[in-house]
Image 1: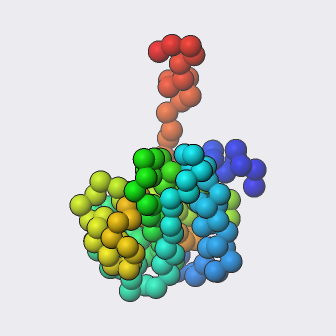
Image 2: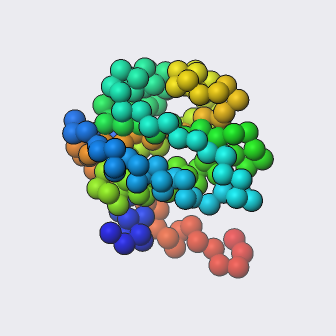
Length: 163
């Protein structure tokens, strides 16, 4: 799949089939996060791949808008060391993984982590050091349904030279 096609067609998927995802495919997705750009090449991100159903259920139960994580085949917990640009770096990694997942014919949805009250609880639940920041949670699975929400037209939001 061409990268621009993947970006154009990717949508947030919250409904998954029960098929497991191979470790090889999950590794490719996480590697896309590793290869994302980081400010000053600091590379603050750490990734926990959760395939255990019981742990995914516990993560889902803690979130406010991520209950579908329990039904996904996997969840990537995106963490970052507290650097000046940890959030930007973690978001870049998250976006790369979302596009990679789509390119590998998986559905994915990003669940917020940073600034959420539940963030420290998820960090602790996953056994990560408490000084790491939860940037996001990525639910992954083979899509049972692919939504098609409308995106704003390009000519409504692009401004050339000034607003």
